[in-house]
Length: 213
Image (cartoon, rainbow, N blue to C red):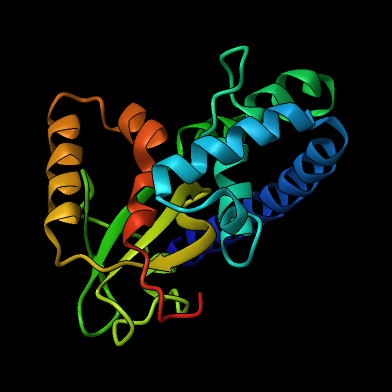
């Protein structure tokens, strides 16, 4: 019985992973075709303001990839929505039930800092104390580089899954601690999802410049 349950979970997990990959590929193609250039210019200025970067830096590696991730999921357009939400609505007839379930999870996913211990175990994040095995085995996050990393995660199937780039952070300064306190207060008020969607890019002010990520 136990092995049957395990096989079922593995099969469902593999299906969810495939659907996620397919959904993200469809979104990428849609975004390339439907992105408004004026909207993107506006977004770059807002991203630069939150992160403390010059607009020119936003277009260079590795910031360009981080900007695209933020632009896709967190940026609020002039009409008051997110690009990924627009994609789901405009391609609704082509979406499966699992696509829509995954899409809902991606819409609430946001950047948040997580703390690692010396064994690379995720031990703490704002409002979250337990992490699935997939995240615990994420080799992209190295405790030797930093004990605090900025990640975006979503529950895909039975596993918490990291989406996009992981960024090492410098977490020992007053600015970081002040932002963390603000995030904790938002969690206590049950406003942490909205807070991280609006302020998540602010964590990038504390990205370690000496680490290639």
